[in-house]
Image (tube, rainbow, N blue to C red; front, side, top):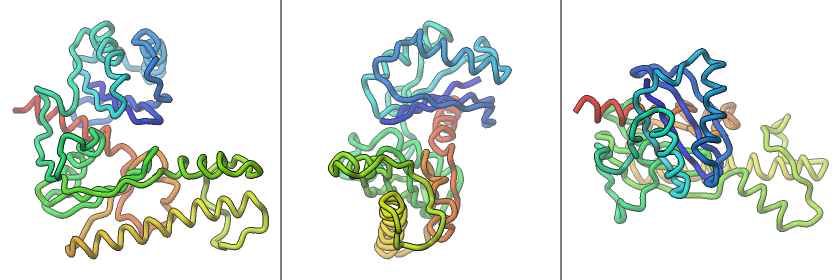
Length: 260
């Protein structure tokens, strides 16, 4: 089995694959101080609950945008699974797609892995991957899978946290879809929720429309990330929602290398 690990700025996601089949997935808050031993205590219990045996894991692949978290995850692979972890984007794991931007070395590992996964889903057509994480990113993927550039915007929760931090009298609220489509709030909390949620919908509508106009070709819009399902009722924004896009991309990356 393959253990795929994707470390984002907010959460780290772990998944077990048998070939191309996703068997189980878990997430934990990202903490670059967490040790290999702490990871294993947490992971071993969850694997047991899912009826999985760590002895069956014979490969580990890691994608991370938090460099300081990498060492302990590599140690986790070596100490508890008896393998040397593969790291996405580092030899011997080349991307297998072109990064056609001015600074290819600066493309986040998660965005490159998403491009690989999107290409597996929609080969031969242009794709737009919208990822809702700590930051919200929009990435153009070409028909051949090449990464062609994109947009980085503040994430939903980041925007809300900035609002609360800068305005002393505003309360902390949980982000969720408003109960109605009204954009006139009657309470402070509802006004904040409307501003964040419908403001984000409007931003997505505008950015997606601008990218489509600039690209000038039909696009398949794929949403992913922890908060993608928050906008699932806005069906006009996306053609499909793929919560496991990055984890599946790691699986494809491993299998491509393994088959080479």
